[in-house]
Image (tube, helix red, strand yellow):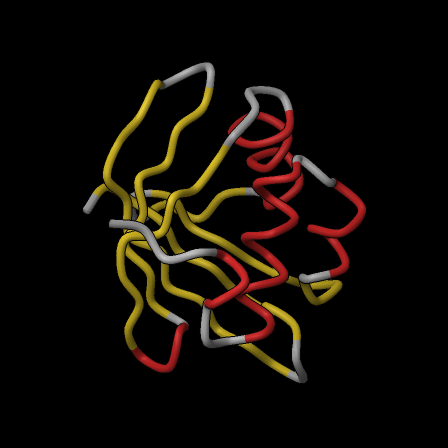
Length: 107
């Protein structure tokens, strides 16, 4: 069972997932702070390069299974054209209504 994106609890996370699933680069970067950081499987990555490779260049998509921590922690089935589908966890830090950091990895 998945949670519809428009029902995600945290507005900043909802904007991030909505933009990611729409492959909307402008909206996704608007959901992030200018100095946002991220990590993938515990290793810090360049946000722009990672999004280009894992989302925009490979049609990334999240189907959210569950949320916790007020909507700032998600478990989702994530798929893209590079890796196929995998169960992932996502942790978001929100600052001033925008995401300042996200961490993702296999769940």
